[in-house]
Amino acid sequence: MTTIYLIIMKSNSNMPIRILLVDDHKIILDSLSLLFDLTEGIHVVGTLNDSRHVIDFLEEHEVDVLVTDLTMPYKDGIQLSFEVKQHFPEMKILMLTVNDAPDRIQDAYKAGISGYVMKKAGREELEKAIATVASGQMHFSQEVMRSILTTAPEDNQKQVLAKLTKRELEIIRLMVAEKSSAEIANDLFISVGTVETHRHNIFKKLGVKNAIGVVKFALKYDL
Image (cartoon, rainbow, N blue to C red; front, side, top):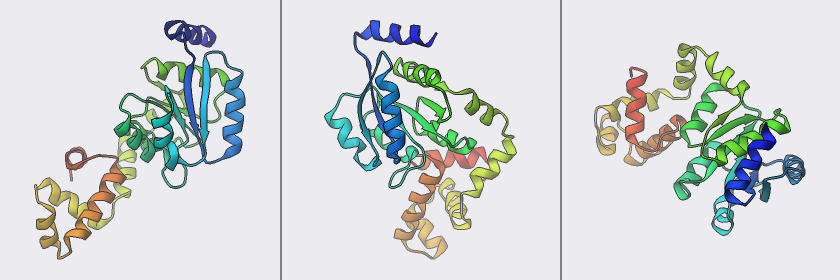
């Protein structure tokens, strides 16, 4: 079934699916490269063990699918996905990781990924996942879907709220009240620079790009 899927992809474009592998462990990169070298319809354009070099690589090479780890130094997979989608909105991203925490899966989805697969997946599933996201569809492994579906809403809410400090929650409430950074600084007796630092941390923790995303979060969790 997977082989047929890959042949269809190749026959439509007459080109193999070009992938970039990003993982801070070289042994993982070497193993994946060896695996895909034996796979018809997939070509490894490059491998990187430092997420800081991904944007430069993508600017210089043609890549169809970015396959990246989640937990990495410098920029994790979620931060990297946000940045890649800002520079290359059409880039397809597949997260390949050992992390099946529901909140991280949701953060990755918000960052713009097209697929999420566990590293314990077999060759067949990896091939299928790459072919699926390359075609413009989404692929989430059964383990990932099970992790999401078995998490109670109230538990997920606790996980999200647990990320935020008391000060950050105060600032979120003031943002919902349409207060500017200067007004928030005045209300809390802190500097505007400190407010901006808190805002940046809030955006990062919630996986949102702007104040609208923060407001949506606040409404969702009745803050």
